[in-house]
Image (cartoon, rainbow, N blue to C red; front, side, top):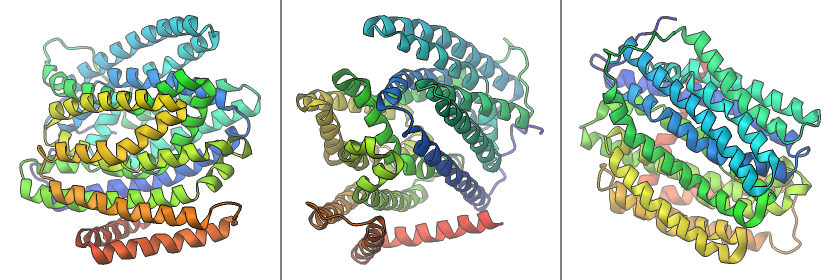
Length: 501
């Protein structure tokens, strides 16, 4: 495959072409994510019945540090390559060696960190898992530029196929290892094998090979753009995982295992469908910079659509929490049902926050977004400290409720200062949905309280009718959501037509 660095610069491309490419990208991404979710659910069904919450907690604790280091390694370079109008082979090659050098250094640092953490907890397992997982940096760092080139060219079909293949193969490795009785090592093997397989496939497909480092080629402009992206991404990752750190500190590995599995299930829809669909629109939205009136109209429409999809999905998951935990994790995990419900409440806001963050980055408000994330981190730490008075479940409870009632509306207010989002309408629509959701969940508690048990089929019928009724009321009473439903329907129709073709 020949790499064209300037293929999609946008000078000669019309908005219709960009929209068509974005729709194709979403259709390819959606197709692969459906298969990835099926693969993950099958893997979850098997592993949850073989491994213990402590096994999951051990690997989840190490993953907290792995994610921070991964953001340091990537350093926002991928975003800078995608957004920059023109790049050449020498620039991308130099960035490759920067990324690979950083990833090699992080591997060494991570092994040393594992030794000290193992000494602190008097548990040698931490050192073993830290050392083995450090290979993730080498494998991931070797293909950052290959992925950026593919995304810059909006080759989402190829990206989706590569990701799906790596996911399926790594899941097979993890399940096989667990069946053979390797315990938490099966999770380690699955974690390490995914970036290895994905990097190998990216190299094979793209055919791009880096040249030696060229000192005459300057790359400071990429590093300058990516510095604030790096800071923001690291802080955002800490925000996502600071609750997990408090849970580990208060409740230990088993509590962290319950939290990790519940969080993964609660966010599986937003991570595998909504967030990737938002990500593929970034190259297209970058062509609309400066056109504030047009961006404002699209922004509110997509904001309402993502909010509506997230909330309806969250309601269905919430009402079926006992059944979902029992089916996916088994009887041994049924105590995680209440935890799962609290995490659903918070995870509903993830896709909307991601969309607004993409808007901030695309419009060049990277520094401002990083400042907000520092403030958000301080708020979450305060929430965790307050919640710790009621144990590790109190940490989850306080952070979830505060996130919905306070942090998210404050984020909308902050974002609307920098991007053309209609502040009052966006906040009103959020609380408008929150009112309907609260009423629906209250109704659910009344209908399914005490010893009143229903089989899964009655649950499904009730929730399907309830969700449709919920959508109908909102569409009738709120014009913004009526337009959002039409927009979602038309978008999904276009996506499925592309999938068929």
